[in-house]
Length: 191
Image (cartoon, rainbow, N blue to C red):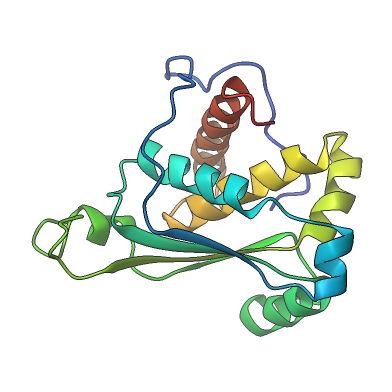
């Protein structure tokens, strides 16, 4: 994620209506797992169902078929540092990594599956989040830990769906989608 702070705002992104707090069907195949050691999980619990539902809402709002699979994993700093080094060539832990597999274009293509119940499974990818890094970032961004985790779930899911922030135009689009999803989450009373 960019170091210039989270995209929190009281307004919906330009060109979109104010988000509706209605909950879409969120029973699709999104899984969430806390892979941190037991003592860490007990000391700093993560609301797996809450973040699973948020990820499912983002997928629904981005018009991804409910049959598309996504996994969320919450890891400790050592595991995140290892993933960051192996996949990004960077030292130390980061807050979120996304590993796209089948892209959203595959999920939407009726000739490949397009969400049909009898089609092949569509595996969007994995989002890996480090709650300890999120806690530090929350303090730096002057937001709550839950607000930071919500941002990381949304950010990671958007990366899996092909959004990026390498170029200014991409950043503007991705930030707009983040603001939309985070505002929707706030309107639902979750953060």
